[in-house]
Amino acid sequence: MIFSKFDNVKIAAIAASVPEEVVDVLSKLEENQEDPKFIKNFIKNTGIKAKHKCGYDQTAADLSFTAAKQIMDAGYYQPEEIGVLINITQTPDYRTPATALTLQKRLGLTKDCLVFDINLGCSGFVYGVSLAASILKTSTAQKGIVTVGDTLVRGRKHIKLKRSSNTGLLFGDACAAILVEKNAEDGFCSALMSDGNGFKALGSPYNAWRHPVGPESIPGDDIAVFNFTIGEVPALLKAYLEETGTAIEDYDDLVLHQANMMILKNIAKRVGMPMEKVPVCLDRYGNTSGCSVPLAIVDKYGNAGENKEVNLLTSSFGIGLSWGVIGFRINTKDILPLTVSYDTFDDGYSDDVAMDMVLEE
Amino acid sequence: MTEREKLALLEDMLELDEGDLSMDMALDDVDEYDSMAKLSLIVLMEDEFDVKLTGEMIKEFETVGDIVALMNK
Image (cartoon, rainbow over all chains, first blue to last red; front, side, top):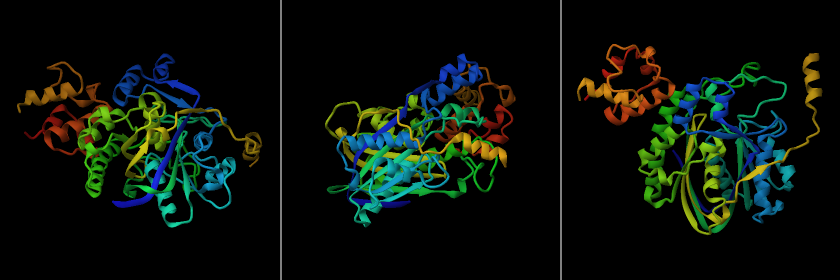
């Protein structure tokens, strides 16, 4: 593992945003879209009953913008204070440039800012926060924003998507923003790992440069992913506890990537954390990819109206394969209420003109 | 652990009634043995028998007895 200790850097605020439309998984039964037994078993085993879904006019960047703006509007930063903006997504607005650049423009950040995208999925939270903290530690930047999340449910205009049943039901659209800043008193640690040997376990290998045409997603290797998750993630959590000289009992919550209930229960059991201290939000939001850890934190504390410090142990894991752990303290007043995003972005490009160009070729 | 006790573990995992499974029963004929059940089986085998199942091992299972044969206690 790559272990990092970030003295004098803190996670200063967390916000998350979801689109307005709610998809009830059981409604798929009524619409007769799926095998009834499959749906019932799916709900029983995954715990996922509903999720939010973006319409065609909204992207992950819009949800990320809403969350980052919410933190700004709450007075946590001025645009000119931000020296780092990292956007982590698998569903960017464009192939180029990086979507983070449009977020920089929309948030009104200055040119004195490092701005880039990272292509990671479910592990996005731990990677993004660790990278932002690393840059803050070695630069003149004082504050950084990490935006993380995907729109894996949202369809694409003009394109009929073919997906596996599990993928279609499992995911939910949501994005989060995390403010990381230099601070004289605080600090936190992270442990990160990756394994490229598992690059085929989960993925969308088509529609980029090696395989330009193909389906939007392909079925993952469920068994390989499950074995990875219940093996590697508890092992890294235990290694993190040992490295930091802490015990699982020292933490108020174990916040895990909301993959599915079976995985949450197994990881919790293997590290000795009772399920009462494992926040669950996948029942209402589905598996929200890289956003799921901050979303689970926002879901538990965002509307609690409390003013108390909590010690959180978090772990994100998934596609790559890629996984990590972060433990940090945060005051619950700095965890903002969940917002519904109505933001969109008129970038001046026209889908209709683009389709005409495709047909002419 | 007797063979009957091992079958009972699988019946419990698959939410079947006692006696529903037999050693020579083809897994293809057990409706409840779906993709999610295979994940539950991974947990059961590791927790109860310290056996780590891989995807390849699971693909090779043809009968209920093939699973029971790995229950080594």
